[in-house]
Image (tube, rainbow, N blue to C red):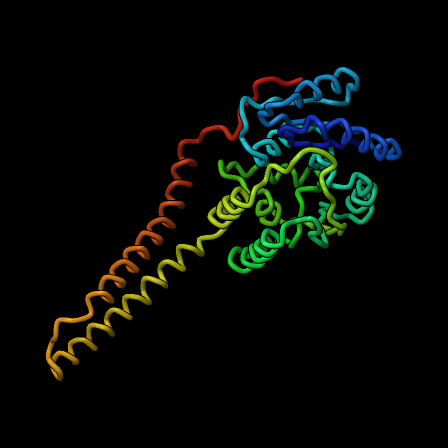
Length: 308
């Protein structure tokens, strides 16, 4: 019998985790052609999440858990779960039940009978999300598809049902700074998209603020495209040409009308503007250097403190 590993990254999910386990158990209980195992990853939670994992593991031998030594982030937790998984298939799910468990039979059918390598899910709406957050999220997906040449679906979730061959391809990518949505698109493979309406968390609060999502989007851009460096080069070239035209203009004006001392406020504004532009471009270059620096150090993406 084939085996499926359900990877569940958790950070402070003491309220949601028992509800998640019960909901998934009801669904997989009807999928008798598959053997299931849970890989619950505690990403440095500060509540009773790990204790709940241990109690579930004592009650159900199919439940396994990993406790990371600190909060490394969801990307690291997903990687840890995939590396620990042993199934012929791997599913990644959030513990807050925003990923509908009832889609699992349909996702399994897609990879088993329809010969897809992966069944991925996407939200067709963003009901319940702040308007500004939804607006910037849509702009981000459009921008990434243009500059990075990745197949990133708007509203895509990490909720995926993957064959082992795709999981192995993902695990072969050893970069320290991971952006899974980009990695899923980069490795390719045949993917079937399954739509569902947005759901609210069953319990607890979201760990993603607008600022953290913004930082995550910057991580994705730097990890999968050098377009910001190209933009910086074009902007620099444009202002060099503009400066050359301005020099010629001032030279001709001085010959024709003399050189009166004037324009100090505008000069100060121009100096401030170009100084800020230089710092902005230097910041872009600095981000890429920082990423390269972290990759060269070759530190582990995560550290396991306890497993069971």
